[in-house]
Picture 1: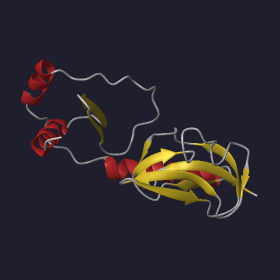
Picture 2: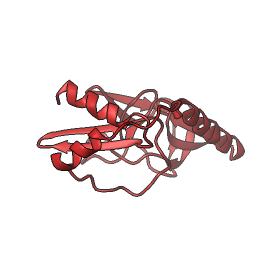
Picture 3: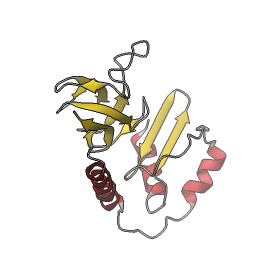
Length: 168
């Protein structure tokens, strides 16, 4: 993708309430996530935007600049997750960086861990792909998996909770 096109797209989104945009043009795909992700919503099929629609959108004046709510939203979400974990005597395993979450080593392989399974310290829980590197995320302490908080193949943010466990 042309850098100038990318800059134009980002400028058009500046000051809007848009948090995610998927752009498909030929064989190029651009998936932008701005700020902290909104609460889970049903997946919506991405439809390529035609040039006749894109031009008027880009020509609209940008809304007045607002303070970026992303850090506050991220901190509030982390605090809510921590409070929920403390109330329920559970703990979460969070993503150590931005990337793509995978529950197994390959699409044909079984998941590293399943709900109800007890894991040991150091056991591989998932893979987070970042910059074409597959990074194994390991359990920092033993526990029973209560909930997988992210869908397989989804992008994840730094610090985003991936799993919820109860100590064993």
